[in-house]
Length: 254
Image (tube, rainbow, N blue to C red; front, side, top):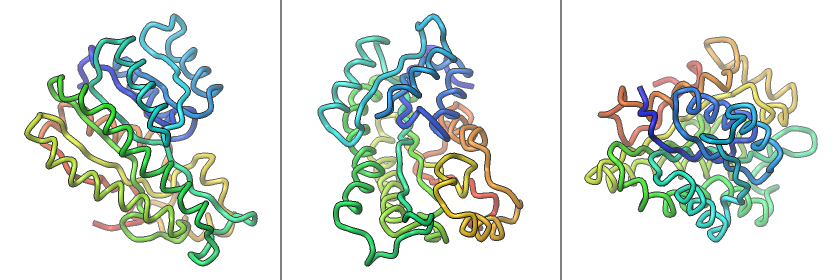
């Protein structure tokens, strides 16, 4: 159960996993700020979830920019008067033109830095901006989207993606200990392959290879990842902090 007075931010909310998470939180009664660098997707979702515009708002922001993150968070607090939940979902996983992953020596410094900025620096910036507000509430929660690639490297994940997601999981463990005395829980979810637009960036051969390694025999649906996030945010997980919840269909055991 999630307190219906709570306010949450979901980054990368315009499509895929982020859209599913935002929709689930709104269905659970959370007032939600949809944040994405692409405005059209979050505006459409906001109208779908809340035609009256009272409990769901779309805010365009580059979550790798400190000034835009700070302005975004200030806007949310100004609109809703509080902030209880942060879901760090924004992320990218670039592929080569043929849909295969780049080896480390094929990755340029510019691409490396771009992936870490979107996947990892954004998590740092969003946490830094929101924590002063979240600690003012009872039962605040931060959930970041990691990846099965953080746990085993993966057959589809390039080095920069795996490194960024591994760092998200490490950051989650440290931040959980840092914020536990202040009543804020910090967790991560590590999806395996999910049936989203990002999966389509990989070649069919790579996707088949990934599918062959999933014991449940299919990719996850975005709502299944959203269910895991909703659990970690809810009171049912009131004694859970510092974990990366493996949601990979058995792809990564343990």
